[in-house]
Image (cartoon, rainbow over all chains, first blue to last red; front, side, top):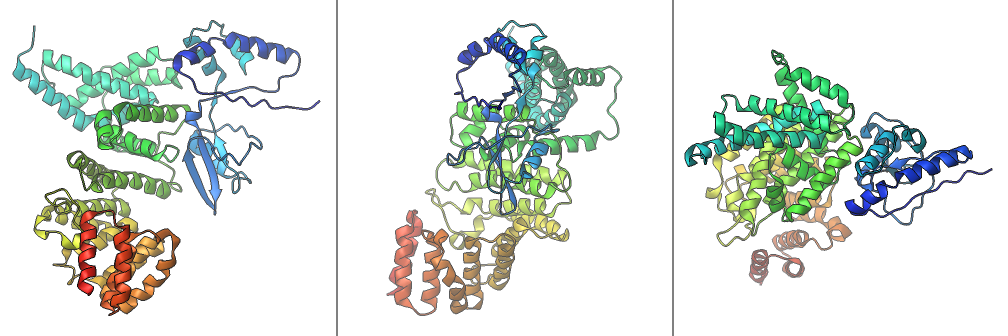
Length: 137
Length: 421
């Protein structure tokens, strides 16, 4: 068996269109449940919007912090870390410690907690029981 | 029933005064208590809207600030009950309800709490994970008390654009959990430098506007100085905080002389010194003295000291250029930059003669960063001319003239070029 990562790219859309997408959450819950039953799902998490991204680089020993996603097209995705931090300051500090920070860019994106994912979908009109949280992430 | 015009105006004035004096303080505390920037701001906004109606009906309360604080807290409780997305909602509600209970008295350390809350707000608004324009806008709105419309006009962008920028910044603060706290000691110097940069940028945005839109931009200078004063109250032990305020005051003192009646920029040496604001100069010098007494030199203090020497001299000829050259040297060691080095070369040229100035200027002539920098060639021409090299000076003036984007400046350079022949 090998593990594969599915990276999901999407365009930001108008609130009305986004609400329609949120309403499809039951399909996600169903898919995650079946993947889990089949023993295929290792992990799934939703990220907060790209507007909440911060990029970290270390150059000449100095930490550079930039608002926004990472945007140099020559660089490609090489890996990921998930850390539990008190707040963004701690996350940025830890990102700057990565051994590849002197040559790479670390895009720091907050992960949306499963209950928030559920709440956002419900606010958009999706109908789901509280237990759905278990299947989301 | 329409209220009589006169009391209505008095109420509007009272609300406007409370907005100016109390809003930032109430907001800073409420953000900590509810843990959500947007929700706190909405609650404070509700409170001011309620004040217009209630004060018109019941009269203006004796302590408007306390009234706004209580009203904003109650609105925050209402909003928090409806909004499920705020982290630690139950604890926050319990705390706010406790604060709202009758008989609760503010404790003795209320003042220091207010200072801490305002500092937290300063560091959150100027957080490095927010893009610079967002830091500027948030700082002006949350700490300076300017409305989104006023900020948009001052930065010459459409109001919806500025509104989106502010909303986006507040969302990022919430989603990415930008902390609401004063940075730890080891991070403080770095983060404070970031805060000062935001304030100085606001000042320069107002000050650099030499033509057009002048009235609007003066508001930015005033707001930046008010922010500088606030920082001095909040962090009186930091020398650079005083240095920045001194620098802004000393620049601001020359505001009226920087622009001629037709709205064009006037360089320092050509300014009518009688137009300088002597009180402002005095204020700036006092702040600089306060900074220097703390014995922690920094770039804003050095710049303020250079400006002070130029202002205090009766004219360019009687200026202490040797001292200014030394200050530029210190500034360059702290923050190396070819522009600082150019200024040092000019000062040395005036203090020790053109040959010494030319020697320092030589390496800058091949610096690609200054290749299209008009002041470099103007300075080169000036030094060559004083050294007796009229031909070299003419070439440098021609280069400076070609790079000049300002009519007044170009006319002056052309006059000097003609004087060579």
